[in-house]
Image (cartoon, rainbow, N blue to C red; front, side):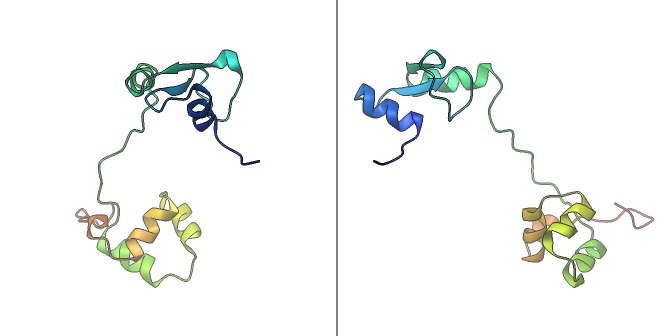
Length: 113
């Protein structure tokens, strides 16, 4: 027996792909019948916005000075240790290590960020 998510089960159960199963409790693995309702994608999007549950992407900010980038790139610490030290995510450190230009900012007069 193949395991499927609640959303896929709803499509199979209700037999239509133009409707989705909406989680009233906002817990995707939940399958309690009284926590689910059928709606359209537009209904689901409206529900998400009404509950302020959308992903909030922050603008790409320059996160490191040239000195900090040099320190990151020459460090013997692993990416997770560097992330903890600089207060960023591991993926931000990965991007800095792999030359993504939007990860550099100018330092101020005294060389700090």
